[in-house]
Amino acid sequence: MKFNTLKTRLVVSFCLAAPSYLLLWTIRGYDFKDLTLYGHLEYSTAVFIILVILFEGHHQKSMLLEKMISWKEKMIFRFWLESLFTILFTPLVVTPVMVLLYITIWDMSVWFPGMIEYNLFALPFSFLIVVFVNIEGIIEDWKKSLLENEMLEKENAKARLNALQAQISPHFLFNNFNVLNALIDDNQKLAQQYLDALSDIYRYVLNYKNEELVSLTDEVGFIKKYLFLLQIRFDDKVVCDIDIGNYGGYKVPPATLQILVENAVKHNEISSRKPLMISIKVKSDFRLEVRNNLQPKNGASESTEVGLKNVSDRFKCFTDLPVEINQNEEEFTVLLPVLKFDKNEYSYL
Image (cartoon, rainbow, N blue to C red; front, side):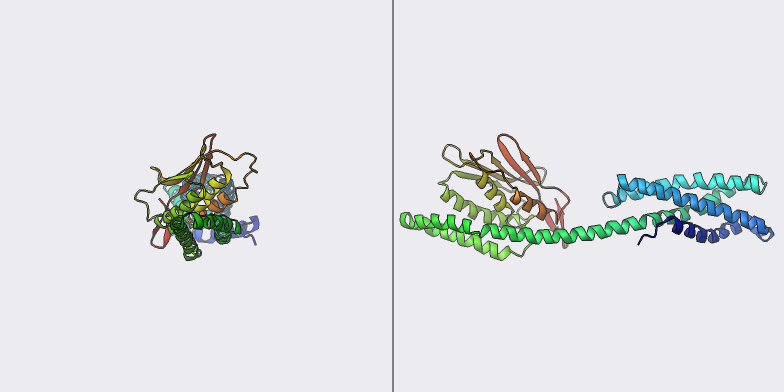
């Protein structure tokens, strides 16, 4: 139900006219009792007109600003803009109306110190009007934010499930058990290492399946095990360089690196002539970069980008910074915000 309507604004203007007599008492002082009934009516009408103009001026201004600078996007900047407009707009309304009242109705000379007092008294009323005309929009933005956060939480849960399902899919199991079966006959020691790595991967999946964020150290430890499986599967034709510097304590959603590495393996040719080169590192601008050389498979179907959307959706739960995806003829790069944990709140570095 909307309360910021023309009818409501007129009613509120009428109600606010009554406290303005405090100003009349202050300015007129001893001769306040000598003000005639017509004088009261004229003064009340002038104040009512001022309040109506302030209301409509602020209303139109706020609707225009909301289209360009919403409270949700730039609250601090919007606050100062509203305040500046109020300070400048109020005297432009109050002074002409009161001068007109003095000169044409009361047939009195204008007392300019009194004009300053009128404007100073009107300023708090003008700020109250600003709050009134904006509060409905702020509440609506707040409700939308709550709804968006709820939707993001649902998407996050769905994304975690998708990541888990991708790791334990029959296709993933089939490939790894085939490799393991071949190794058992050819190289039992390597087969044992392969089995240990596979066990560690599933242990990681089970331990962190309900976690929203994990440390870079844990995620890198996991991806190294995953890369070990890939390197055996592709005869060392998958090469990965990892450098996270001193940022091991910072956070990413679990299985983020696995999704991106798997994405690179899925969509690129891997051969002795064209090995897949992957780089994972934290850049100088404090973003985690996952980059691979681009060598699309012949006849490969167009990517649905489900994995990339999975990663992007989960980061939206913790930061406004986007997951940036860049591609040229030679490389495919994904840039991720690096998150840190401080006093029960996540923020980006």
